[in-house]
Amino acid sequence: MESHILSRRIRRGAAVLTAAVAAVALVGCSSEAAPTAEPTTAPTEAPAAGVDPFAPEQKDITVAGYPQNAFASVPVAMLNGIAEEYGISVELQPAENAPAMLAQVVSGAVPIGAINGFFSIPAAIEGADVRIIGEVLRGTKGTQTVEVLDESIKSPKDLAGKRVGVVGLLSGHQARIMTAVAADGGDAASIEFVNLPWAEMVPNLQNGTVDAISVTSNFQDAARELGTHQVIDLAIEEGLWPEFPDAQWLANGAWVDANPNTVAAFQCAVVLKGAELANTDQAAYEAGLEFFGYTPESIAKDVHPNLPAANEPATIIADMMYDLGWIDEPFDIAAITVPLPDNC
Image (cartoon, rainbow, N blue to C red; front, side):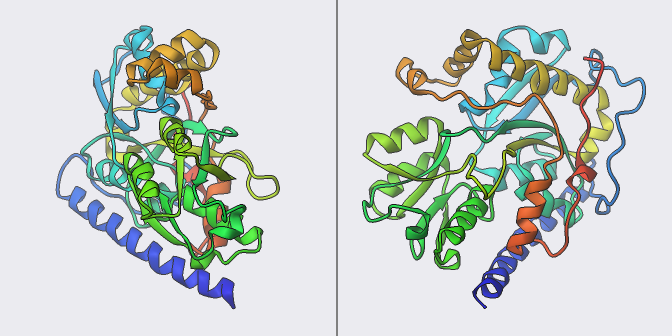
């Protein structure tokens, strides 16, 4: 009975999210920048022959994301001449959270945003024309955790009945927290999730507005300076979920169709070569962190994330959403995934 109650509660929340996305999509229909399309039901075809990443239709690209270590591929590509090699300039526009970025991408306010399948799938189901053009990062042990100050909260099940801060309701963080709590014998449906921007996580935990927060990067460092301890590692929990993309580059579909060479240039410069250099050259990676304003102290504490230089359809995300009752039918995320070019 409890699982059915949980499913119904989540479906009601999902309906609110998808209705909002649909509204944004309809607004986008009124402009030439971001028309909507019918829900995609077949896998996206490979890029057309002749797509040239060295001849982008647009030179300047703004992407929505977070100035955190997971996005080091952007400044690394810029600072090391990789983006210039493909004739593009990429600027990361700081975002509040994934729902805000989704609205920007669907409406055409920005062409690309860092949004994972927990948000892109409902958007696509509602008819928004969106495409996944690359992965940002995959779960890396120790980099994304649920932190608490309350010493009585010792394991996931102790989060039952508590208030937990997450960046975006019905997000990947929320899904994994609910999954871990239920697996530990706790009542996942009794958790009250609170949508908080990254910068508000630690202050809200400190003043007692929430009992736990899901944090990463410098926000994780700030939490631990208060004396928090970890109750869930959101990267990989044995037997619960495997490695999968924590963030993906989601693009406006109309923009993708109008700028195939620009998409390929971004995929080559940021998704592939920027991520590869950030993974293999520590100096280049740290320079990227400095570009984001990291201090020497925060760089010393940094845990290098897994920047995969890939774009593999993350089936696990759709499966988890279906199991939680967040979507009514299985979804093939390959249907909205644009393969990486082979001519970088």
